[in-house]
Length: 93
Length: 93
Length: 93
Length: 93
Image (cartoon, rainbow over all chains, first blue to last red; front, side, top):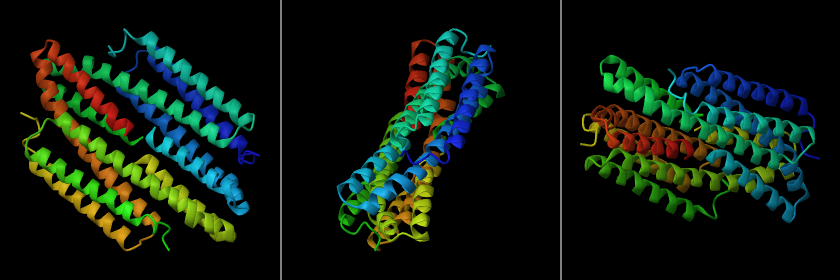
């Protein structure tokens, strides 16, 4: 159970939108659009990906990590370490 | 002239690869993959977008901004301000 | 109990080091050091602050959030929401 | 000539303020303040450092890089490469 079943449709909708934005970027490059306008659009896609990550992470904390914590034991520590490492990758990327 | 004509094919290749990665993310969500693995993949897409932005920006500085600077006048100042604003959006996104 | 008592000395050591780095930045500006060298040093301070945040956050998840989760009830949800909002601020800053 | 002489006082003022904020963080840790409040304050310091970097970088583009560009030759290319590398470090930190 991956902890994001309920909201899978919402996740897919966001990702399809992001895919559409990356196709839009290709059209902008193809049409020789102004660099700064392309950069602005890349920032929008990056923000959309970050929002997606943050909602996935919140769900993960609320389901997988919370469940492991309630069960206790070494798995709880592992899940928290794993989530912290994922947060570090998000912050640094 | 958008300053990235020479390397347009390289830009399009990168963006097509990023588009493919966003489709990969949709398959991961569809297949109920583990959240942490999805988050790792999102970080990879974000990094690829950042690299794309940085190479676009370097080209912009080397072409558009450099040309405006050689010509001098108020347009040079404007181009530098515009590039700085784009950098700020990149840093903050 | 703020969840970071055990490692307070480590936190204070890190923060004193960061304070020293910000004084080093003032000396660099005062001595008219080269912009790029100052920027490199600012990136080092930013990375040190991020590492500090990430270790504080991991502790918070392992203590405060884990405890609230074990107790269950609405407070568990609130703590997870609060931690997620803090993560979002970290990712976006 | 480091390109930031005119506004050195402004830079020093910002950095002194950031140094004060890092001392405030030490007091928060010492007083066992709530983790989330400390994290919020770290995000504020990180944002202040980013704003400092961005204003330093804009100045660098407007002075050092613009001057090298007007002079032309290999030094212009080097300055643009060097600035681009500094931007990449900012974006990734």
